[in-house]
Image (cartoon, rainbow, N blue to C red):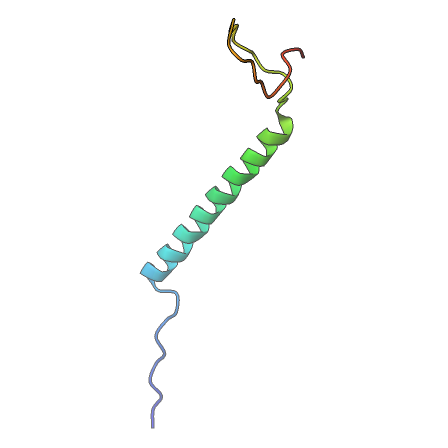
Length: 65
């Protein structure tokens, strides 16, 4: 008996789907790494505060740097 040829695993559409998935995951990981880097580089104690007179001034940070 002759053996039937096995179909190729990495066909064109499957290879495209794997590459697209890898690209989306790389962009997602890069965006999250950027957000983490920005959060560590930011200075939350240094913010511009609007001049509000007469209003309750509940601020999250001090206005001086």
